[in-house]
Image 1 (cartoon, rainbow, N blue to C red):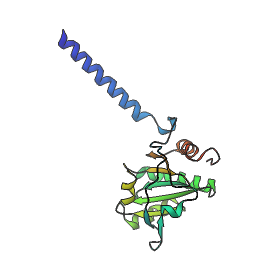
Image 2: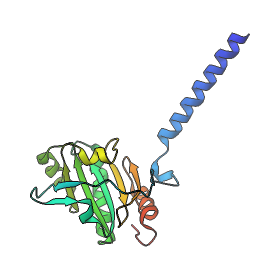
Image 3: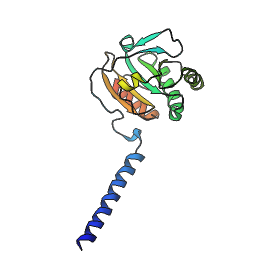
Image 4: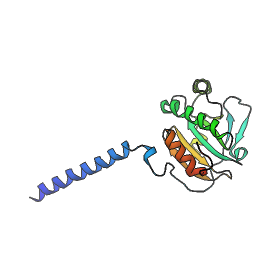
Length: 182
């Protein structure tokens, strides 16, 4: 009798764990009350990277401060980035300079990255991180990952994975307040 009870309890535990994993995987970020994780308020990791389109131009996090920053890590081989980056471009145009948008091509090669930026029609600043130094400093799990940074260089949070318009709007509001609407 004890053995049957243990087997039954084990099966129930497996079903519950499976249901929990399934629910977590099917919940979209847009349904989450907080689209940003790791809201620390600590200093954002510093970086110095070349501009993707102009290798002679070095860009640092410090040089970008003064406005909020949406820092999007991507790769030319990233399929979700193909959908997300035009959305970021649209919001970049809509906020009209109230927040900086910066793309960081990571662990990639320059030629495919430039071709990708042209294909998705991105005009905001893009940086080149071929060795993943900045990505490592930001604890990147994969692409796309978007980090939200305050005007004074503090981590406001990040979103791992592709954002849709609702998720991006909620993340912008959480990070920068209702005054920066998408």
